[in-house]
Image 1 (tube, rainbow, N blue to C red):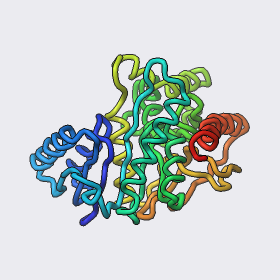
Image 2 (cartoon, helix red, strand yellow):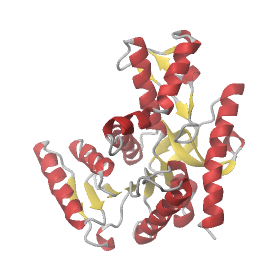
Image 3 (cartoon, rainbow, N blue to C red):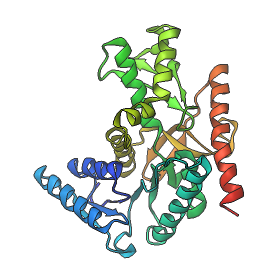
Image 4 (cartoon, rainbow, N blue to C red):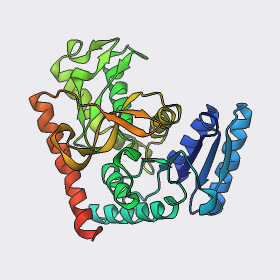
Length: 314
């Protein structure tokens, strides 16, 4: 991973924690941070660079004074966007963040012709769609982080229910990043054994419901703000897979073009990651219930995409 450069746009909690993770583990040669808040981004770059030196990391951490400093990145992670505010409608949030996403892409797209983009901004699936439209890049070059996070949350709740299995739980979640995500109990395992062979239907349903509301639980407890350790670490796994070209399979939000029977819509599905971004979409065999739940998840994303197509991309 020598001579690899990662750009991170937005240095709130997720962006800063991601930079810290990447730098601590020497996952790339250089990290450049970009944010509208110049004093904050400079402070984060200094702090993270100093932590990297404490770890004897070989990663150089800096910040972009201008768009020229943010050039020739191998991977770009975008966390920029605003959270929903009191009195703000869903469409207001969607259109505001679509405007931010488009502005970000237009600022840096020309200077980064070979970059793979990882989107973390919400509403996640709609922002991946926006980034694809704004960048005009091939679908393999733009993907979203959600499935790894949702799967990690499911793994936590499986452990919480069982009371054992730490380090041996492999959970699987598909669909959009929201209440209509599709946790897959039959593709989730504990020590290699399928979850539905270990727990009964009532226990699994309990885990699924907790997984769907895992993010909201943290928001409620924090009162202000949202999760960032798990989102940042999940994103770092995607960055590592792309930079190292390790061909690992992770659930990511990608544009579907016929896979699972859907066209021109973004959804979370298992994909193989490598130096070219999404190198393969893995099509799992879903049962009747899962197929129906995935269709419902697609419909939820389609509502957002339709709003973008009629009110933003016109």
